[in-house]
Length: 157
Image (cartoon, rainbow, N blue to C red; front, side):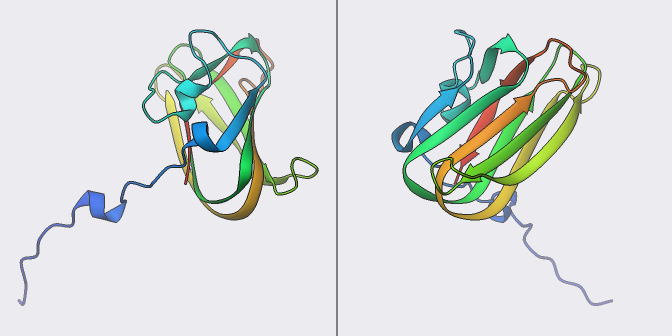
């Protein structure tokens, strides 16, 4: 048998750390509501870990309005739910004309369960140019129970 010993591939070299967009310097953020203990910047800034939580139940919108059109290649979303069972749906969409029209990137549902599935992390490889707005619409429970939306993290590159 012919064989060779090779150096193991470093996991970091397969997925190098992306240079995430500094949203604080490049966009205005609009949000339908926020809990004072969990403001939106806690989900958007890389040095924060607590995440955002709405102050009101029901469907919530997070909208990024860019100062200048952006080119986006990666979008990373993270959600966590440790306390209640629920089925969440979110829609991620973008606009190149300051919100006159939108194109959907993804619409997804996720079942959270405290005994099993407590977190969801999604990374989307996209080829978006001239993005003037990015909008995330979260329906925290499609079963229409009074649940509060939350977002652990949103990163763009």
